[in-house]
Length: 253
Image (cartoon, rainbow, N blue to C red; front, side, top):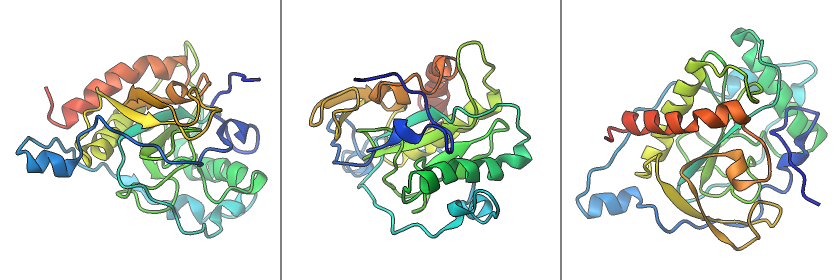
């Protein structure tokens, strides 16, 4: 029986992300950078925003020191064609100086309680707009994450730290950072954040049966690919604006 699941923090509710990394998705209607160059079209790239390396949070000790363990070698796809936006379903009123500890806690819930190989999100963004590297493997590489069941290949997961259900304020610094990160990451493959791409589900517990090719937003919410309320109604309502900002950062009109 399918149930609605939110994005899941730390130890409490990682079940919404299990079985995320099986199978391979394909994309057929996005034009990669090499093809853009070959046909003489304008490539739309965006500047890479500042990304805090995972060593800043993974080196902590204490209750979440399992996050500091050395992960196994990462898995890679050939490119990133879409990004999925999440929220961590954790408290909002944190001091941004405490973000590394919060990420350690989230990672401990996935690598400790669930015995995953690494934190599932590729990136995390705090309420002050600071971007953190999540899953190991290199921020500029197409690292296969564990963030959106059925659609982890050729995608990147960006987690907004907090809970953004209906009526909750979504900080402008956070949405601007998500837009900048998506603009850069999708720009590496020449993808317009306002367009759609075709991805093939690898898991029938997603919104689409395994093997089904779905047309999804290039800048999507978690709920576009999986039966969940994540990234929360308030953050989901900001996705159109985030897409426009990201496209603008890529120099698109």
